[in-house]
Image 1 (cartoon, rainbow, N blue to C red):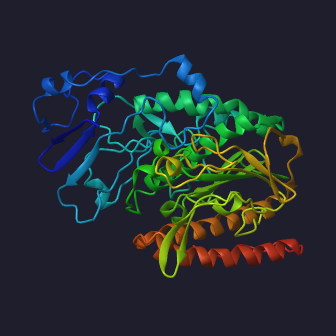
Image 2: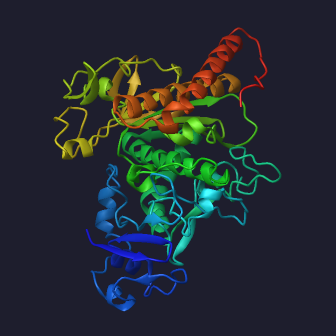
Image 3: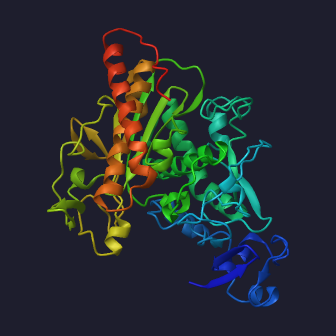
Length: 464
């Protein structure tokens, strides 16, 4: 991988495959870099090196992708973006990121974020150092139209003091090339399938594969959106897989689908600003009209469900255990709170297979990507198609409460799996956010009991 380094007086930045990225974005010089930035060997010398690459793959490549998931390898045509590798005055053990909100909406960033001279692309995670940029919506305009042209309505997902943004204003800075490629490979192929789900039509397993890719993108970008609109109140360490381009299809994933009997706003993201989600963005609920989707993804999520490679603790030591290809009833280690919802799952083990950690399994394709399955009477069935007119409908309050509880329990499991079993430093993600999630869990359990008994309890104002 080509690597070239540039710096200003206070900031050092490294570019990977830089000539290819800027050839793709249409940039022909480094004049758009901030004043005071210089190239290591001169602007013209660097730009003349490297091979140019097409912005879009061929139509044949597009058709091939149309039948398979990305699998954590990134959208075709997007290279690894430039990264800031040193920052003057930074006393953190990592380089913080800064996202720029669009929609002519002014956000006052915190003191740490204001030190960062360049904004991060919400899609690939690389810094944006030229003018070839665009704004990426967490929920794109086709979702706004599907929900009934709600783009100009105030968003219920991000509520700020003073003036709250509209759905159209919930957008973050992205490379122009990343935005274009995501539209082609992620948004356009999935829009008809999501419309079919909302309308109650039949959806194929191949379409659900693309829906799961799109949900990976929504979940990752929603976390960055909420962080940016909060003024970067949480300063977090982001690895590559925190960004949609490297996160889509990387880990096992599950989606729960059901309907609610009534709703007020036609579009919603539930609890996307909660610190428990922002520090571990592995479970999120979205609603389009009456259709509710709870999306969950993490490493080893479906190990017990499909008898796949797992990482467990044995005698105080972490041990990788090859799977036995024996399938469990449901998830194997927990029961879902959304028992009447449609449950769709897809194990994703391409990177495990590449690293020699995953043995062949009947639930996986040759490249390590899993087939799409759904739960039917407690057993996993290969999904050919599903009639979304037959989804279970529940009262709105009960559906919301059960969804929140489902998300909380998955997030707690993920924090334990990622930070305790994997031996990573606890940091905020596990040490401080988990107690809050446990308190919220008890609140929702109590509320479910009261709702099922016919009571309509008010929310505990002490929970904040």
